[in-house]
Length: 89
Image 1: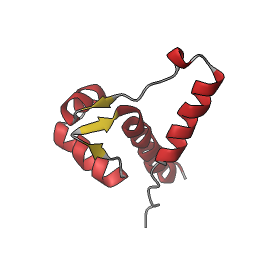
Image 2: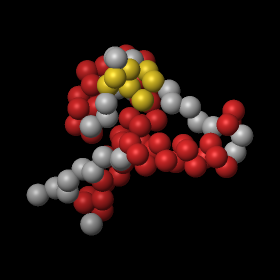
Image 3: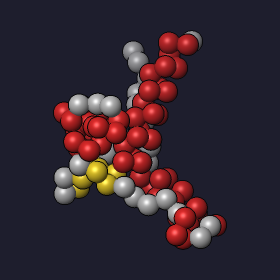
């Protein structure tokens, strides 16, 4: 039985942005970058349908037809790391 995927918590992402924004100039702080599934698919090298399916699997919200790019990519990287761990053992 494979290990369960644990999505990265939205609160952790927001807290990281908050701490970063408080320790540096607010103009240099990372901003949320919300993209449509088509735009995100182009950037991630996936198909549009794959992006939507991955959002549903990872619990990444799609709000008004847009997806938070940083949250999606962090979850995608985390899922890839979790998938590689059992293979190394």
